Amino acid sequence: MAHAHESNTKRIWIVFGILSVITIVEVLFGIYKPKSLYFNNFLSMNLLNWLFIILTVVKAYYITWAFMHMEGEKKWFRRSIVWTVVFLILYLCFIILIEGGYVFDVYKTGFIKWNF
Amino acid sequence: MGATVISNEHALDGGPGPLGATYGKMMMWFFILSDALTFSGFLAAYGFSRFKFIETWPIADEVFNHFPFAHGVDAPMYYVALMTFILIFSSVTMVLAVDAGHHMKKNKVAVYMALTIVGGFIFLGSQAWEWKNFIKGEFGAVETSGGSILQFVKKGEDGNYERVKLADFAAVLPEDRTQHSRNNGVWFMDEATIPSHSANEIIQGFKAHENILVRVETIDPTTKKKVVLSREESIKRLADTKYVVEGANLVRNEYGSKLFANFFFFITGFHGFHVFTGVLINIIIFFNVLLGTYEKRKSYEMVEKVGLYWHFVDLVWVFVFTFFYLV
Image 1 (cartoon, each protein chain N blue to C red):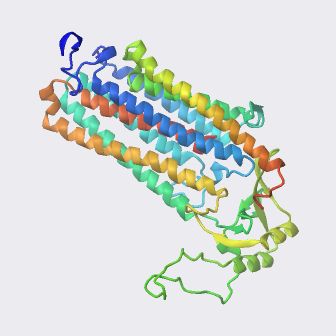
Image 2 (cartoon, each protein chain N blue to C red):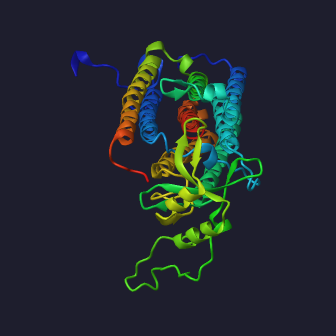
Image 3 (cartoon, rainbow over the protein chains, first blue to last red):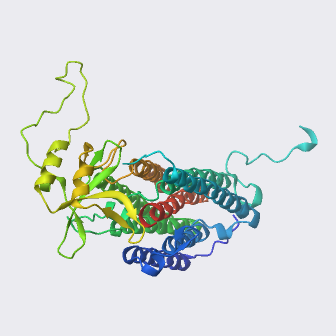
């Protein structure tokens, strides 16, 4: 095992605190939906959604690194997992979401009425 | 085998493997990698469908707004936030169990494992309640022959539109018929549950109530709220009514886009299935802890491996939470 066996109970509770705070912040933003974020877009998605996604990735980082002990694994073991998954997910989202937006345009500008 | 022999001593027992991890742990990680890609596929498909119908997608805050013992109160997100906390907290007890395992403290591991299992069951129960609300629906809607969902609103005291239940305005006409069931049909066939009101009752009731308007699926980009039609347009649209929709199933749902309910059932269902199997594996490991299996083995690594799976389930929920309820 790569990680040392000292107790890290304290770190666990700190990470729990961080995750809780992020969740609460997300819920507050989700309820109040600040207009400056909600009605401004970046890359055809509003800033509020970008904020949610960034906070989610931060949460995912803490869960993987602290709870799943990724920080204690060997560098290339960690990379073989993280780089693979990050690359494939980004690629999948890129290709599929662009296609979704394209299909939306086809429906909107085409001559077929699909929802009436 | 000659000169190329490498040590296969631990190839199958999960013992020391490459990169400083045991084979067992490494394979758990690669399983999680593949499972993560499965979930990303589902969530990306959800994103695809949502981008495809971006102007008409249901607004999550209006769908998931129930909280236990708070009937009729609009409480968006609180319940799922609570579910998120339950799962994060059970992740904490799990990681505490792993930590106690490193110090070979059997009783501590057992207590924390038990707490994790309890957390898992609470989460599953919460999800069942969430599904119940989703399936039952609250306000009801009608579907037109073109497949779009029409919901009903009236102007509230504060000037905002508020949803109206079908039962509040539907006319009662002498046209009830009994549910066709297997035991009395000529061909022993049954049918889907008959809605509480017929399409005609809705249309007649709508005409009798001047203050009720139709709300369509389209989202107004300037307010990010669903468009409400005028009274004349409402009556015109309502003439196309084909079905009365109450709640949700895999064919149609009262919230809007049909895919919305399908993805909800499929993704949260698949995640719930993961939680369920996670709880089962946790129980097995819990009993192994009690029996002293890992005490004899002088290593609590099994707890660590099942812990990885459990954290992964939590990780997926974090993303489901974001993409279904927040975004």
